[in-house]
Image 1: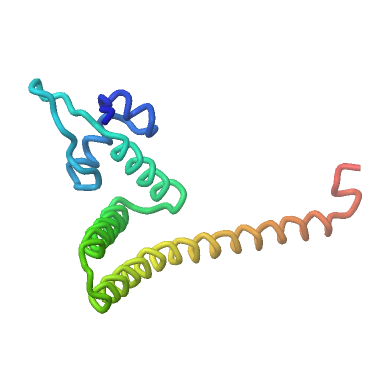
Image 2 (image 1 turned 60 degrees about the vertical axis):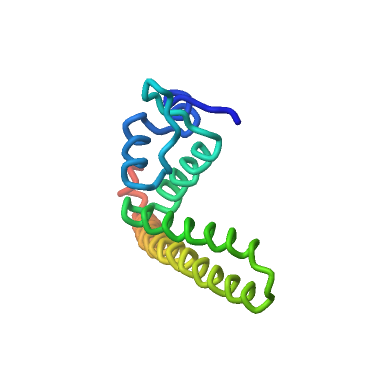
Length: 146
């Protein structure tokens, strides 16, 4: 498995080394292996996780606390997925799938809240845009600088 130093991970994720270490400290990123000298060695999984965090932060506008909550749910889903694959009884598998479904509902609800806020913000700007257009239409030729 390929290992990356923090400089490479910073370039790949678009984050600073300080932010990467902070995300690790908060539990948003699993601790990487270390060399005998203490150098962090990250995997592709770490890079992918950081890209997901950047997307959640930048695209969805998640706060740091929301990122923590989002990742916690994601970790629970992974644990249930692993448990699901070890279960043979259909009813227990069904129960695990129902639990994962509930967690996915939580994540979707978090995203829906952000989308509603974005839609509301967009409506405010659209109203301002209409007001500006109406103001321009009401100007007489002498006010237009003609």
